[in-house]
Image (cartoon, rainbow, N blue to C red; front, side):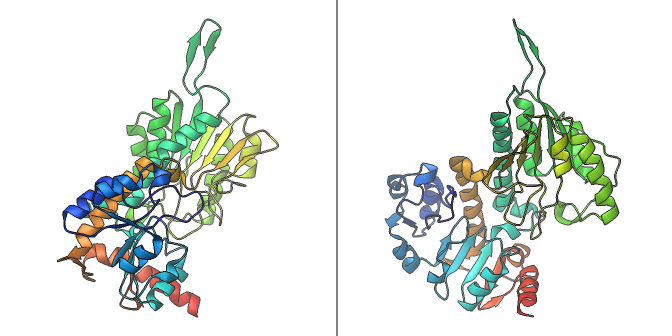
Length: 374
């Protein structure tokens, strides 16, 4: 296991408890010195769990399978026959898949896991990390908001609870709703999918009704709205957003730019002191006009916009613990008789194995690589 090099990334792919579990199966585990320090897992804990704590070069030289959270910045050091397992995000960066294939490295990306398979649930890193992100988003919003989230009754009078709107009711959105409710806020949720609206209602939160068509897509994601649907939804959202003290946005589409949900007009209509937390903030853009990953921006109107695209890294111990268990479950599926064994006919393998034997084998990623070449 390597130490993560990406700026702000505090998670780690293996924790000491999972290391002990892997070592107990007979695997030799190499951990780069300092790999877990940002998540408060010291080298001594890995050594006690049965790992060999070595330098980065020794991890590359001595490993058959290298696990990571995000792609290592020095992936050119990978050699033929090795495997790289992590959240590789190849739909956004097909160039990495091409380079891994050229190096004859087997690339395995957990973010491509078929999430509808019940036997894959223990490997579902997107779900485990989205849970962390939704929880932390509620805390970030509460911290940035200038008032109380709960209703408080004091000798000086009664303070009403904050009104919070959560846009998107996937795993992150539902966790944000639940956490905001536990903090005492008055919470409303919205999603374009009918099934997700039922999930919002099941938490006890109110459901925002914009009177626009539902948008059920494949694998639990929302489909892309038509231009007319998008315009109708946006106009209704712009009008509704102004009534909330805090807005948390969580809508993402794999491999595509996140949908714009909170426009400049909506921000201009919000009250001074309001807060917007964008979990989809990324370099291509996010759910919120003007949001940028890792930045707090205060509009001329006095609305704080927080680009929070990698919140799991802000809860590194919990996020790493969940992620390491996902990694262990996937390795348990892929490794047979002490070696990585890829079965193209297996639904899990067909989803997560991006490159193998010098080829890009994952259909979605292969299509993107071929587009780049044409």
